[in-house]
Image 1 (cartoon, one colour):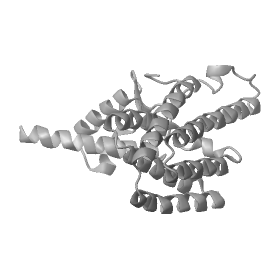
Image 2 (cartoon, one colour):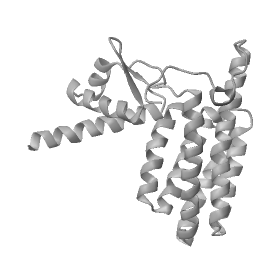
Image 3 (cartoon, one colour):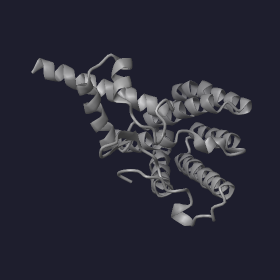
Length: 241
């Protein structure tokens, strides 16, 4: 029994490590998962790795192709069109609840995070901005202190990590995103739940608009006619969409 418990903890740790690799872009969308290389680099056997891969397949981060192996999943345009409105609704509710519960001490802890965000936006440092942005989203989620809401957001956020920070590469988006975050922070300072919710929803949907614009630009560059509505972004092969 003790050995089985240890094994379970190990595969969970491996799953966490793989999620981190996907978030960091070390495992890219569409990339084949090299099990031999991963077991060697992590110093583990195939068994905990394969158990971890099953977990990430169930979460939608990976897919298995018969006779080809395991691949990092890819989000299609339809996936993003379906996910972002849900995230906007859920994170908006988080901001609403956070504004009701935030304390002066909480605001003091949030201040340096927003200062970092502003600095990275001014420098145009997308990777640093993305990391600071993620910390702020998690901090607001923690302030909301709603485990049911957090569970839903965490699941969708993991899937969205497949697209990483592509929206920030759209011209002007990093400055817009920073302005939106500062507006959310202002609403928290004002203890304005409705305002915090509205600006947060706008923030998420503006990310989707940037992704649509990038997809349209890529299609135009490739000489393809513009796609319509839910499929504005090019479809990619994926599982569990």
